[in-house]
Length: 93
Image 1 (cartoon, rainbow, N blue to C red):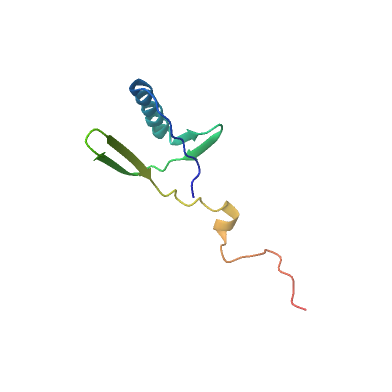
Image 2 (image 1 turned 135 degrees about the vertical axis):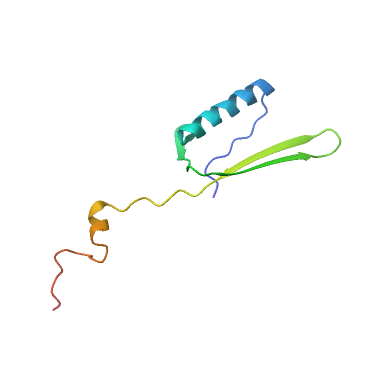
């Protein structure tokens, strides 16, 4: 499922500035996208770098990061007694 995608032509200097911005956001653990989107980045990230030559004069560099966010801890009351569904069960009729 795509969350966000952006494609454009920029100068080499603008690309370098954007990559520095993404790197800074990765260090903080939060990447921003679009008008107001954010995504949390896990401590361990799988990364791929692919450099291709597409014809005589065309090259591409693809950088991809992927990770799995750890499951959130359950609330304290659920963690205390995971088998209990209701503290005051209704008697059977």
